[in-house]
Image 1 (cartoon, protein in one colour):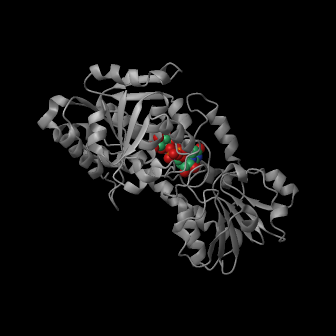
Image 2 (cartoon, rainbow, N blue to C red):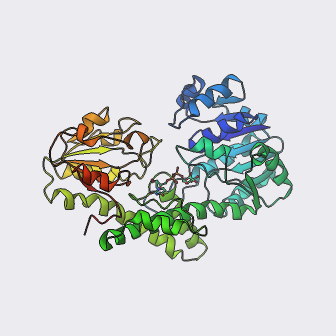
Image 3 (cartoon, rainbow, N blue to C red):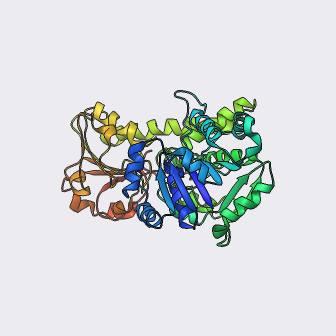
Length: 434
Ligand code: UGA
């Protein structure tokens, strides 16, 4: 099939490349000429394991075309995917749909024959209806479908190839067959093809993210209780997660959830609730609890190092919101590192995805190119993101200082082993912080 992906951000680029890889001709369009130039010279603007190679293969096979020419891409395609950003409006819970609507107006301008328009961007309930209104002048030319994306950063290619389900929302049943044909290589490998109304699909996306965020927040709050009552939260997660009605995934206690999706989509769902005069009190309290958690875990360092952090040396391993991504959005490190610097600590950090501009202007904060230099001579090592290369470290070799401490926010290490090595060790949801 011939597809046009508008927006070469995370969703557009990964799904566009993967659609090409299963045999489609895909035009990836972006206004950003530098991005398109980069892509045309084989450089991916985003960090995603395996993506560079997949782009190269499909580009060379001429199935993947990168262009700024929207008119050409639309004319050549049967299905147009809207993959532009839907951020929160600054300081509010509302979703900014201006990029989506701008894109729809451009589609209207360039379309001369029948097209299917698919929203892949995460959009609030009723957005498809609004799109239909914008397109009413040429309404016979368009079918508007919702097909939310469920891929995770860092695992995106695998998630595309082996999705748990493909959700298609349309008010026109005829379009289900076209979408089924498009996804048939994945359906034949076992992916569930689920159809519903357009509004239904829009809400499913927000509900999935809000539910997962709730699950994480639930275990994080239980972790606080475990710390005070002498229980290991990992036992609780295993004990409840083995119940197939609950499920074991997304029950890892740790820092506040972050990234470009959960924080934005929980707020977006509350805002949709407000629009339809429905109080989503659970989601509201998840947002608050997650916000409080960033402060709680940041300030906890005082319980470890005392009130005065002046000249204390703190080494931080991993600053992205999770491993296998360079994404810093809503990462706990954005709060933690400036706070420690402000308190006079000397912070060094290392992240496998490289130095972060967010910390460049901070006094007392230095990026180190490896784990060794980050941990050397520190009073405290904070493990913030569970990258593979942090999983088996010999801290005694890394830090010759006597009395150095480890604060492991991802429970990567075994407390008993740390005790045997006589390393002072703090983690999350284990009885450390009485
Ligand atoms: C999330 C969803 O998992 C995807 O299905 C969805 O497509 C995507 O948002 C999106 O809407 O685009 P992502 O933001 O890439 O994916 O990251 P996750 O792997 O879901 O992690 C989100 C946050 O939760 C991270 O901060 C992670 O560290 C945290 N987390 C996750 C935990 O603290 N504990 C867990 O058990 C799992």
